[in-house]
Image (cartoon, rainbow, N blue to C red; front, side, top):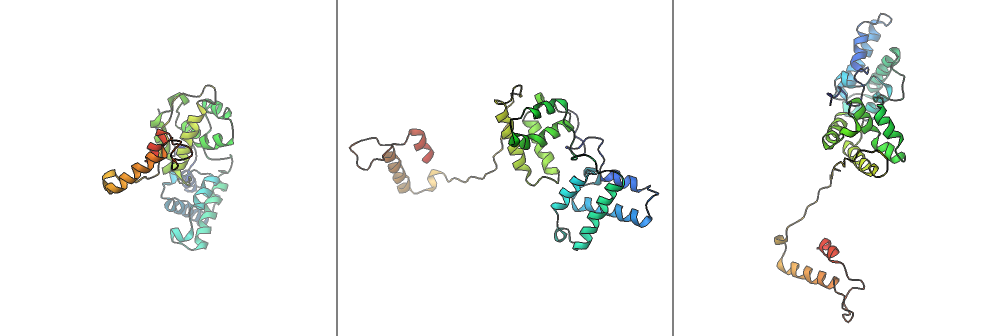
Length: 247
């Protein structure tokens, strides 16, 4: 597996805000004031996002996603300053022609494109799209996917600023991947571990009074009774597995 690019969802040669800064260092068709304004906007946006300029795609969609997660109050500036930074960065993207393309993600490789086109519906496409782009950008083939790749995908989601809830996105991708094994011909047979994030707190039996445990046992015994002459027996006795789950 090849090393991951600087942003795990971008093509290795994709332009970034660092590309914009490099171009701004020698742009004779812009005034000095405009150059400084655009460069300051790019650096400020990277600082607000807690990223290096080279980690932020030079694409309007990526910039908007960052700005949508920020507020003037959160970064400690007035609304006018916030709007000026946004305007300066988007103006720089337009000036250097970084406005084409539907999105900033790496193109799907032929192998991943084939799997994507075989997905049965919108939910599966939405759940797996970013994982497919991640693998394509990282030169990972479908047959190489395992829990290590899945965990690397989660780390990349956390490090990217554009995902609202990385853990849920990763969890949904794992679930969808496993479902597709039986639905899509030729799907890799590797079952991914689906993470569980809920916290469960259970006290051990010695923490409860013995009288409570006795009452609990008596109640569950009653729920499993199938004596037709017992007027207190439940209408439908519970199975042993259900009794165990209740207990």
